[in-house]
Length: 339
Image (cartoon, rainbow, N blue to C red; front, side):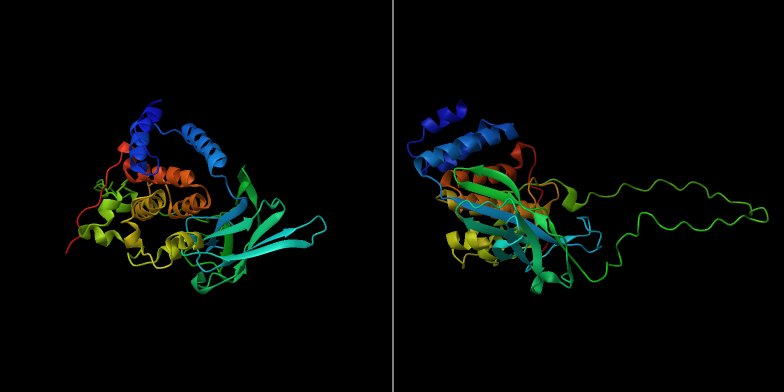
């Protein structure tokens, strides 16, 4: 009811979308998952009746390096860029009816688009080749994964794929040993063991200082454009191109020359706001482990929004704005860089 009242004060939806964001966050402090789904479904229905949607199917997933060759995701695995992923579809006789190949971006993420509404229920995705970013982790491709239908409405389908794995020729030296080691032989002593000595108890150790990445922090885009916080751009470079990070859909919308630093200046329409808040969320995800979205999630949700309507773009931007503002519970923990 409050959101409806707030929107009635706005004469033009696209001219004052920032006021919509303010009203939505102000009067929805809980922002529950159920409200997300109901509002997103209502906006999709409204978008379909006014603007219409173009029939398309989207497949997304990620490729990881299975450093320990244990056949599953673990703490030691990391995303692989430059890996070739092939989606193949077969009929009942096993004949391949459709095939598509895509290369993972710098975050190990890939997105494929199929025009129309093809039936991808009998399709599989598998690593088919390595590139420059494989880092000697492309010796063996992991098993193929079946495509899972996650969303279908108004001719739009979204399929997800479980993480694909690529393995090195040998497991890394730091990998843990087998959980079922061969037990050592039991030797029966022939004489009494020597007396044991007990050391006096050690004094308690002082508490460890908190790790910077484990502390919750959420910073808006204004913080990330200040010179005194530029040292926190650890993983990303301000001059990196948006198209390299977010993929071909972003390149088609924003051009191939826009940098991440320029994307933080965007305002004036929903698409610029989406890119600004997505870049901010990406920086926050690399700065703290407690940010609501990880890096792959930020890139995937941005691509989903770019494939939908303008209202879907606005909803995704609003969610990023809420996460970057800390939802009223988390503050920005950046401290000025040392000169």
